[in-house]
Length: 411
Image (cartoon, rainbow, N blue to C red):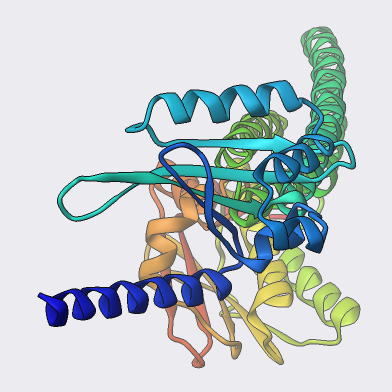
């Protein structure tokens, strides 16, 4: 039937034209060969990628095209061996990378060419230039190795710092044991020795918190930032392991800080010490800072007094650093058998629920630690805050009745 044959030829011509058009719009170099390996079709990109002279392309001399390609490769024998293997195994697909003498890298993909009935017509080859991608991967690998080295060096420095700190603490503890012995022998100077001991402990605790702990925390944040920003899963996992190691060092450092105890307040009453702290805040940061006391006697145990003073100091630091406040007020009052210390600012505020769920991750002198210590002595922490409405944090602790009976106000 001439009409049917003509229709078939037109359909074949259309499909051939469509295939050629699609191949010319591809970013890949495309080569189609028949069952014997003879080239049937290739696009312009194929000739450009392989630097095949135009006169060879025009003549469709397969042998010359092959020799031209092989002359550019680092391992032409391997290339040719793979081609022959695929021609001998018509049903197999293949994907590999081809290395050139000049440093280029091609991704090579090959698949059998079949019609809808499964009849085999030959093979199609796709070539994509991935040289730039490979260079980028190499640069990333190099950067990762350099980062690992820097992180390893930094981790070693931090570990050495902790070891040195432990050594210093050990020496301090030995000194404390000697002081305790002197206290037993010299009862008349026991109070003075206790104050000296506490001053030493306070200095070490302050140095640890203000310097070593902060640097460790910053390092942990930077490691977390790198882990979140990298697109390499293996690098991210290694960074997370390093972050966990730093977190362990941070926790160890904080534990040492707590062992060394808070600053001495024997020479100042609690209210006077807080008032001085408010004045220092106003002087150092230019913040409108106000102190108010109800004037009632508030006898406190020494440990309670130190805890409350540390907590107020940390809350004021948080106001300066994070609240973006223009004013802050600290008030102390006695309510029954309790002392209530409130720190109130007009800053940006925060989500209280978020603090309850996340603040424990900060540890140290943070809100979670303050809450835990107050619970331990029979007190508690109240937080009232709303976004854009400021914050009021209240510390509640028990009064010491033995001191009240003696009517001895703290000095």
